[in-house]
Amino acid sequence: MQIFSSVLTNVLASLYQEFFSALVFAFLFMFLYMFAQQNGGYKRAIKIFFINFQKHKSYRYIFYFAFYCAMILFRTLLCRQLWVDPLNNVLGSWSLYDSQGHIQTEGIENFILFIPFTILYFWMISQMKEYKTRWILVHSITYSFLFSICIELLQLLLKLGSFQLSDLFYNTLGGFVGGIIYVCAHKKSDHENKEGKEEV
Image (cartoon, rainbow, N blue to C red; front, side, top):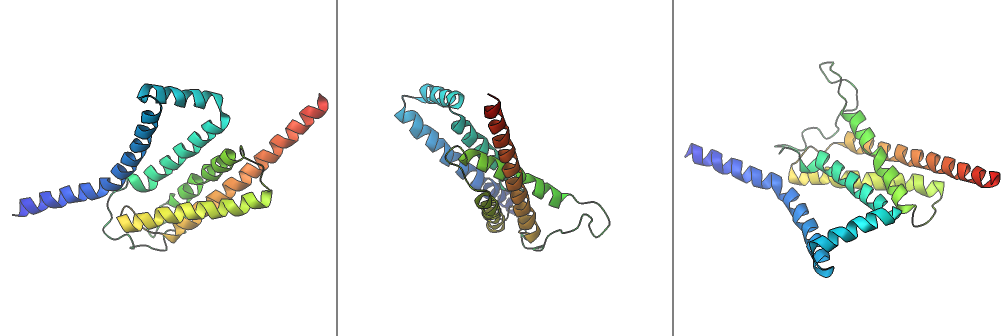
């Protein structure tokens, strides 16, 4: 009876852990399936994808952003182990050292993780129209916070990680820094383009 109970627990835990990943995969596969159905099969659908990827810069930017979002989700949610108590450390880690004096880099990693997120996002939407600096900085905080809180709440609900306020803070701060980097790079690029036109 103990063996049966152990096997049943392991099987149910595996199903629980993989359920969300399988759901996302099935959802994306159905999009591919519908697209292939409407465009004459998978070969033609794949060909259309690569043609658009080569021809359209905006198409590539959307792909890069989607790819990085998927990387974040796999690191923070989809590939995580099941946690018994996701509320065991709500405040999280705010220091570079743990209670035993060992260096912990989780905060720095969370900070760095969200810098490319906002850079790629604004890089993607800049193909549609120009945005003011203030708008970019405000929305870099807003979007990184919303994406981060969604991840933290899913970790809590699915028990695939622990809900931590420090993660939320570092992710949002990283997103804000990403917004600053984008603004600086964009202004530098505009300045160089203006100088190039004046020389011509």
